[in-house]
Image (cartoon, rainbow, N blue to C red; front, side):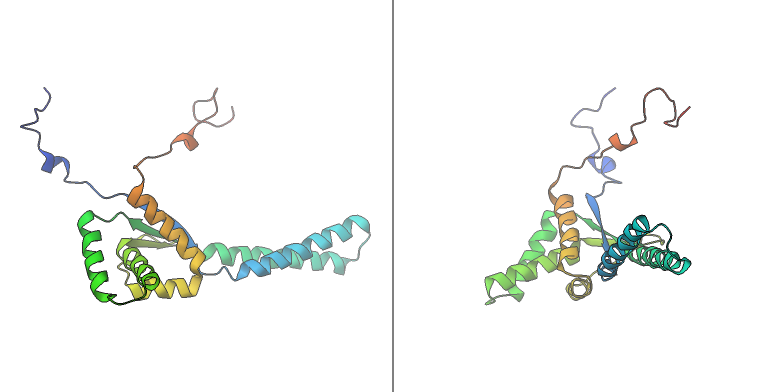
Length: 193
């Protein structure tokens, strides 16, 4: 028996509803990328020298190994500095309240500065949780000051990744992509026979 429009309990159906959420990965140690770039060039130079002179000394080979070790250590530093930031869509009421509060606060401001400030307001309201590498997800409340601090420490480009995730959560139709789970044909579990 199907529910009629008069008897369907929307409240019951909405009991466990949640707004769309997206995530973005940011890194607190992007400074090591320049070092990685330089080490990669030096490693490639060492490898090229080894092809030209296969009878290199043990010290030369040790130098190449040391460079590779430094590279791996910096890769680890970079990857361990990752944090996933979770953002959610804001309700129309939340957006309206933010807009009203923002307009009062920024009355008389230069429009460009006011728009930028509104972006911080929205992002602070949208960030709901973080998950530092190797840790559990943690619910958070961000302030505008914390968003600006984040931007000043990791850079505007990385903050734009969080903004893009927020835009997706706010404006995209919720959908999932299970195609990456596609298994090769001919096996039941996707592994070679």
